[in-house]
Length: 622
Ligand SMILES: Nc1ncnc2c1ncn2[C@@H]1O[C@H](COP(=O)(O)OP(=O)(O)OP(=O)(O)O)[C@@H](O)[C@H]1O
Image: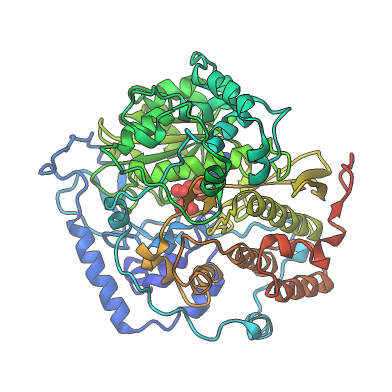
């Protein structure tokens, strides 16, 4: 057990690199950050001093709501200062070290929270466990990294905060009253007879057919079960009266104009459509998207899916808490509040609109013709909720905390007026970080499924995930031996070896819907690129920055390849499973060859994937 002093003497990077879920320490970060200088430690102490002053339940705050004082509970406060550094948002490097303070105490004293369980590495079979071999690790990096960038990325050009970008109110939403908007609706409404998904073929679809479906969507009945809602939810984005002042979100069954104009509007040139042309309120827009007139309560929403007592927490991120609710997973993201949650400024409605559009657009890949896949997690529904957590949710949170040691703030701190966006998602299984892989076949199946999904989304929407760390790759075991992908009209099946992959968390992703480009300007978040040197995830953010030259609006499918390389590293060095030295060699040479590809689509042609792709569905796993 660590004493306070011991923990305080760790550098910030070391603290951040502490593994969270299974208590495994991030080897890369530990090695590379072991020589932090006194200055950083000094800085860290001053950050801690700041935190002592931080009181989220400050009675002087405007929206102060007295909280129930439960002296036996402990409220954790981040050690990282007012703003948790951004690269730390991700699971693989998050490992936020917290201090414990008594919620009832006036004078909060730092106290290192004791580990709830002994660090334990998830390993399939002790027979294959090897003790860490630092020499081997070093040799690996010397060999594999020999072709990599010798210098770290230059300092960010634009200093600013995440919130600043939001203040600019430059979030974008597609004009849904366009040809593409209608096409998107017709896709949602009619899975079987849709046009091809390429932009040119959208244009070839008779307008009248789209208008017909569009009108259906416009007058869609709203009284649906959650399952029914899920099928039509994109139409809810459009079911806004023409008289609404939501501008771009407003539905107008307009004539598409001449074909040249339509082509221009569907062109893949960066033409972000700003929502702030009028007096638009992003919160109102979000409500419309959720097809609500006012926010509902969390318990009202959850009782639609299951008995609230059966709710179980399944994971957490910096912004979101994920709960298993019936057969779905609900990710709850607090928004628009004026106090920090988990050390971060709460996201604004406008930012969530981006993620919502991305999620719905990726849903369309499930029913596309030319470019299709099911690897991106299905968004079933979306709701705006308000109020504090109810007893069932708090109970679920606390159960998870006992088992896993939560790094998030206790939800009892949320005031009655707190607003949340709730993503109702399909259950994707466990994240790669905590999933126990059995053998090399499973590892390479993850690679082919991720590569193929990225290639499909690249082709359909110029998609880049931009944050594909091992907390954002979910896995579950299934019977299906193959999973189908359609890439530019060509069907292929990837071998699963019984493993099904789902990709989640599109917060940093970029997409071109043909109507608008949705992206997050990472130049506004310089701290994202300040993770520990040598940490693969942090290095991947820095490499993305080199590739994009900090211009995040443009298309750079190479970023998808960078995350594939990261994934190879994870499978080589962070996961244990049955494999031979030849398997290791194959992975290392794949990583090198990936350097030659500029997109996931190109990478798919690599010989490594050759025997993982077949031309027909297979019945049996193996
Ligand atoms: N659909 C899902 N099925 C199963 N588990 C999920 C699902 N969505 C999220 N989770 C769990 O919740 C965790 C946090 O989710 P997510 O990464 O989307 O939150 P976040 O706050 O955006 O995270 P980050 O800190 O990466 O920004 C995931 O790592 C995963 O363990």
